[in-house]
Image (cartoon, rainbow, N blue to C red; front, side, top):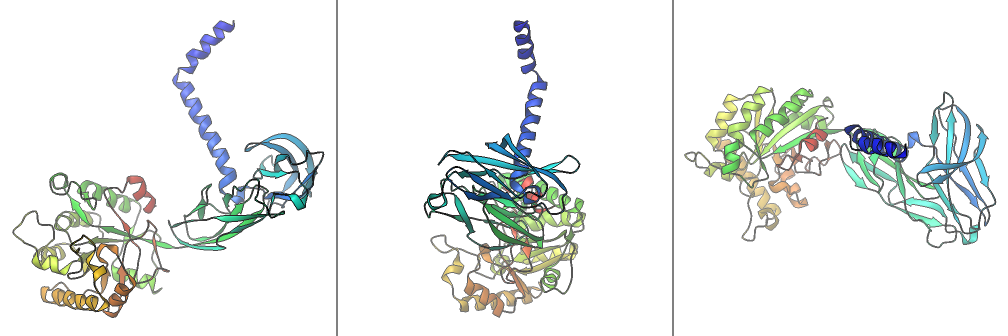
Length: 461
């Protein structure tokens, strides 16, 4: 019989059902553990109230808005509850665990049994049975910052310090981080806070004893500003721009615009964005400003037809000197000519041209961006040349600006402002632009060949 069962198990183990079973169980286990460590709304707050050489007293808070039938205190094994120690009434908020061994570490979990059969548990509380004067248990947690202000999809690393009763190092210095509302801001086990949606929540820094420090997190509403450069056909990408991470394929571009269209995104101009930042107009959550830097010929030739197909507006930031000297007879020219830009405007509605400097989008002899060797006066002079070029070429009056290479040192910002520009754009860290941005340092997310579908889909929700 034993041999038969063994063969049956071996046959089953090799089957697909075994693999699927293991995958499902692993997923369930992963989800279970995450639920207790990611959102404080699903967690009972418990901590160490006091300790002695032979006892540890636990305390916990009442659950707001929930009907508790009883509390149950367990010893803990790892992240899980173990042996049941005591069942207490719904009004209980403390429990003393006695007859413990001096200096030994103990772990506990408190579970609130709710009406209807559901339950809410605490994080694991760890402590040593030690008198307070010698205790290396944590008595206080101090986050590095008491408040964080983030933009949608922005992030920040949070750290915290602990202090013990004895002043000596804590026997366990590890900090756990928990969000009060993971729909507004999530936090990883090591304290990396990620903004999800507008609103206010708290991130708790939790010590091994359950003591907490609290950080207020405010997430401001964001607006998606995409920054493109080149858009090439497959042949052009393979033969002309094989190593250019700033030039994506036409197929990728169309796929991204279709994603925006299918999600119901509204496209806007720079002026509309400016009015929104100033609070003069409101815009739906799914709004996007689509921009192109450099006015590259491959993008001017390939992208507008796709934009027209989906009824989308776009802004093109022009480098005056390169455009003025571009060779219109070269079928594979890098920068579009004035005639190319004029034709694009005539053929496609919703296209606007803005400035990307006249002659400062270049590098010096050692490959460093030219702007870092220039002065405030050079910026003013460059803008004068840019506006003169735009006027003589019939390309309009540039009131919005994108910094060369996305770089915006403080003196450059001042030069931009003093040149009459209303708003200027750089590149950020994958966060959405917000009304709280400096209007002369608006954050864009850059689309590259390294921008995966999952990354783009994170921006376009």
